[in-house]
Image (cartoon, rainbow over all chains, first blue to last red; front, side):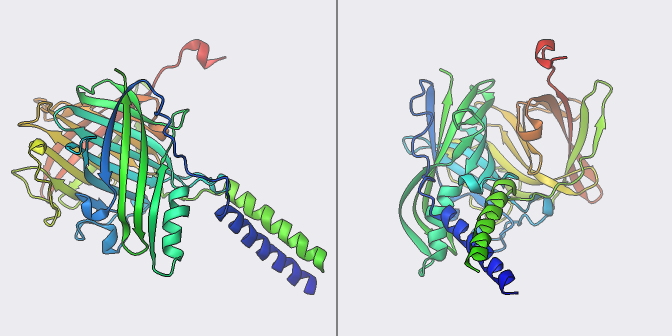
Length: 224
Length: 189
């Protein structure tokens, strides 16, 4: 009996050690350099606020009002869509002017990844570039660094809030260099194919309210 | 005793590593796809949106309601003529299988079009730009411009039709998909 107890105690210790190794893995640093940084293609930048209060609309399966905007919006409670989040936002161009209306769908991916510090998410943007036309952006994202360095400290901290400066590239594919795929739909974008990279810049996150000060940036590279 | 404890630690580490390597972080619910095979080898699938209950967001339409009523639409002149709708998307049996966004640009917008993005979480996403005007038969048709996951590499189209019903209305979306032919050399023996 005592050997069985020792084995069980060892098993539990091993699992805890593994969780600590994963959590404090020094090799799991967020990607900071955009794969498009050295690209010679024509690039456009769209910025948006990732704070729910700044969005036009936001919904998910989250019953808490903080996860929805406006609070009266339908929740995504049906089994097929309960792992999905959708928001509508007005995105600004590089000079701060309203440039595009965007709808983003985000769904947790059915892929493993914890061993290599990956929390995989599939997302798509449906963008209407004001006065120009439309684009579709499909990407795989890795949320590990955001979870590990922003969200987890907010949830584990005594004040339930994280404050600091954090920047990370979210896009990890499906392009070979870790870029998302872009397909032009209408107007001057019609027929164009390109690449995209999305990044997040976080300054404050609340465990109860979600992002308090957080911006997203979408860099879209199109052929000249 | 200490050897057994050490063996337990190694087992715990190994089991955790195996679980982290193999187990997916999400287990998405998937409804059976109701697909009919066409004579050309393609697949036809009907999706539908029941109105008004499946409309999550409706904004930008000067003549129509804003849903939810509390939604604040940006007061930006360059947005005039752009409408956005977010819907729950159902299969032919009225079961919710995904979400859809419909963006329509008309009036003062220099580019006029209607576009659908169908997001089926367990299967992938489809993107269809369409012309602004429906045909004489009431259908508006657009070609598949991009697809992800199981829809990657397919070609096809989507036909949109608005149908009045005694209970309200519904939007019928009929997709026709076919795999893109591979060159004989690439296909192999």
